[in-house]
Image (cartoon, rainbow, N blue to C red; front, side, top):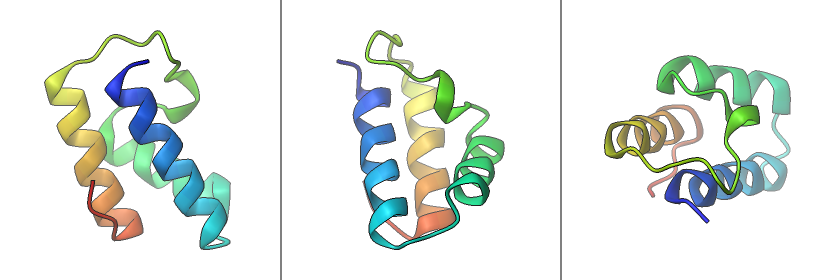
Length: 66
């Protein structure tokens, strides 16, 4: 699995645990990171820039440190 996919799973779990509006939270994260969460699969190649942007988006939107 890729690091991007692992982060996506953590984000999805946080959205569910906090009972957030999933479409809104995913949309905000996708816009901030430039990466649509729906398109991140276990086979998505890791890109250090994309990983950093996704982590920052999760921090900004969900207040979670990765």
